[in-house]
View 1 (cartoon, rainbow, N blue to C red):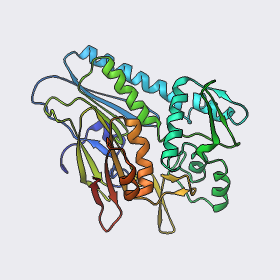
View 2 (cartoon, rainbow, N blue to C red; view 1 turned 120 degrees about the vertical axis):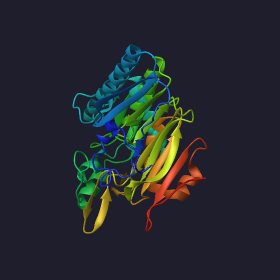
View 3 (cartoon, rainbow, N blue to C red; view 1 turned 90 degrees about the horizontal axis):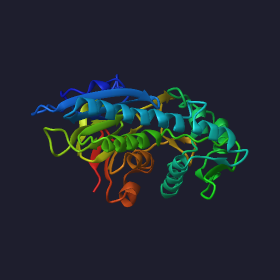
Length: 338
């Protein structure tokens, strides 16, 4: 696997895979044994690169399906981004501390899922970490050391219980000023799932959808391998090595690790994965990869499993999840959980 080529579209988002994204799940190139039409399309949204690789028999139909899927991604960017001032999420963040804000049923349902997952994960998944991401410099940068006082002030606005959802009016209210929702740990997975639905609706039966190389869904299988799409999980301590492999067939994989965005201070590494319970970057395992039926679930749960570690994950993970976990020892100790 070490010498196999990586798809150019994925490599575009991982230019320094050895240093920065050593553990992101990446797509291994397939060599077709037949002659179906092969297309690969790319777009930029949600601060990352979305790619679609597909096989089919009609180029016009395939191109149209890819365009429709990308249109869905850009629609969701305008709904869920907190970088776009006019997005529905940005407007919610601006107004919900003053009065309840009515939102679309789509956004309401997504927030409801997030609230339930926060409860089940004992608060380790929390979409109110926005203030913490800002004081630690991870909002639009690679991070910097935050003072205890700034962390203390930010923590006053952090906590999923500060969000009140009213299903009768589809409205959202913040119980405290300063609350800021950050769907960065949700949006890519949700977008991939929506793209998959769009592609299936348009008749695509063999396609691979990737968001930044870290959240991926395989529709069906490539022509030369009925077992599914070949994905390798990189060693979080040496990106040139392979830590694990999986075949994706009508399933997703998402990977989280401290190597994705981090900084060093006083000889210590601080990663972008925040522990909402403490206000400090999590000191969990090296990386976690989850194979699940939906990309939204695999993306969300990679964070709690990273923070809470092997024992908690093994006890609480659903039976339909497969979890590949790398722990921090002399060399990365990686294995699939039973």
